[in-house]
Image (cartoon, rainbow, N blue to C red; front, top):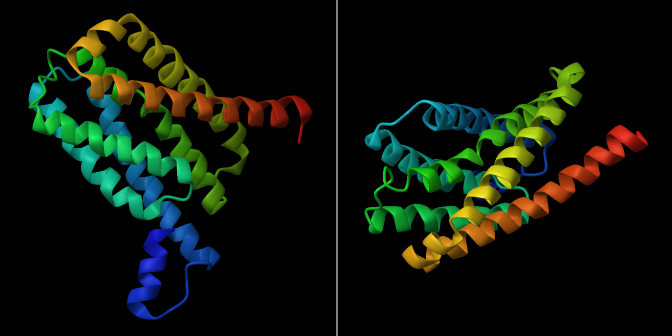
Amino acid sequence: MLILSLYDAITGYSVKDEPYMICAAKVIDNVVAILQNLFIAYVYFFSTNPSTFHFTVKLVFIIALVGWFFITHYEIYIHHIILYAICIFAFSRKLDLVKHKDSFKAFIGTELSTIFLSIRDLIKATGYGMPYLAVVNVIFALVFLYTRIYLFGKHFYNNMKNIWDYTRFGFFSFVVIFALNLYWSQKIIYKGYQELICGS
């Protein structure tokens, strides 16, 4: 985790492999992720305010920049690089997020599952709420598959030509994000099969 390596470099300590420091960093990262994605859930389900849409893009960009220091899996780097590029594209093109509301919501909707992923990671990091872990895992998997595969994939399929005509970059971003989602979904399904069916 980069944040702990930087801490060691600045202070001269060696804590990057200490379980309590790793736990503390994970708790901070996941609490921030839950708060961000609860706000995103509000925007996704209730908001029609253009300024809120633009604020959401800025919020995602800033928190993703901070989140770079807490990444523990290499594929998240790919996800964040694409996320930065999408946000910068939206800023530089002054994208009309009301006009492109469906695509905007298709993208932010993928983060709804992260609420449950972060709750799961908090339970595992702290040990609190372990009796609810299996339920949280199932909810996370269902929301992930519904938002990131079905809804995101459906929007991309139905609007593929329009996205291609409007922006090649947007088209490429959809492809990469969907490919990552497919990769993660097969891991989720396989792990769920092992735990629920095989009992391992």
